[in-house]
Image (tube, rainbow over all chains, first blue to last red; front, side, top):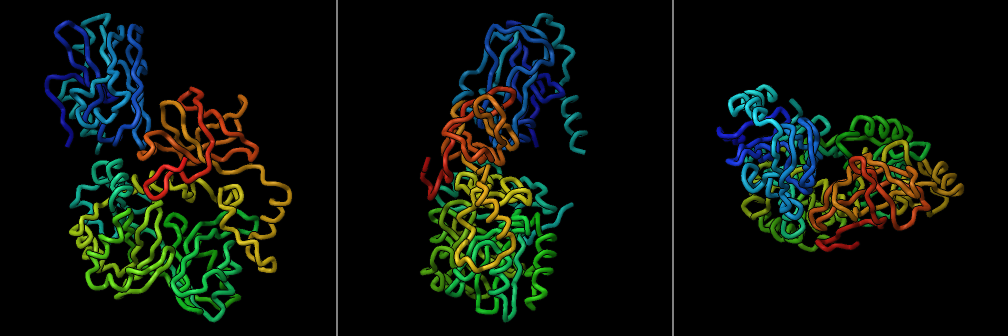
Length: 131
Length: 360
């Protein structure tokens, strides 16, 4: 079964979101998403400094099997991207919630984070998808 | 729920992720498809290929019949157990299926055809066989396990115990019947190894012995990237009834000589050859970051010229590779539309990898 850390927030499109102390948000794909995709072989991360809107596709993760977009959970500015993924996309398979982070956003409105799903809601959504 | 092979419970016990494949519940991977791929390139892996259809053809005129049915010539099968890869064509030269045929005796041949084409193949063969008095016997009592990799034979010999003596000198592309099994030195990965046909009820015993001999189970995911690297076509993706072998990188499987041999599709192929074959199947190696996928468009000089038929990531080469059907006049470079971007690809002649070594 997939791991869903309690302290994170989640999106319908299977991103996880972590609120950092400085108010920025770190984003990656969930353990459930990486399991569905299988071995990742290519990751395209967004450029730093770019403004993005909630729901915009801003990264791509490709496995042997399929390509999948990664969407911005909130509106804001990209402040960091995980460049290590270019040479080692498998980090996402190995550590989806840690070293496998994909990008960081400085949100325009800090309240947007609070409207994201919590761990229980995400777990419930996955359970429904599987039935 | 799909059909289950005799090894279904073994797959579940080993944590396989199961998928539907042509109506069968088959293992996609047992954790990591890429690790399974490397296992076959470097050591030994095994695949449950029980979904493949095995059919025996018997009769006094069976050789004559197969010389008419198949584009390759079974007259090349001069010794017992010798195997031949061939396409089976329709009258227009379109590929009904690709298969391996084994000559067992003068009056008995065995064919292994694809799972996805089973019904149409059998219907077609039965219809053509009537005038020759050839009878078909479906071997659904058999199951098939493929063991592939540089250490596949050595480890299979260990699993077979004393029966191994009987196959140690078996040549490449030969089959031999041993202790109720039919062991063939064939495969679909570009590595040495065996494909073993045996009674269904004995499948899990052999699978367990192979596990004990440290052969790792591998899923259909790795099987697909292995065959792509090895330059082997997949029916339904790289060719079907709408194209001929000449447009599918399979001209080498068409036996034109002797000229007096008539086979189904010959006239159509000859006409196509005389007019000039417009398209061909080539290999592509992506020179930029990204992954080539089936049905992506291939561009030459800014115009759509063809399409990818099989695309994936090559674990051995660490970059994306594909087969594409393109104009025969294509040069050494093209572009592929990958997620709304045109990326550069190099045109190559498959295989990409053979016996563990890159060849492009």
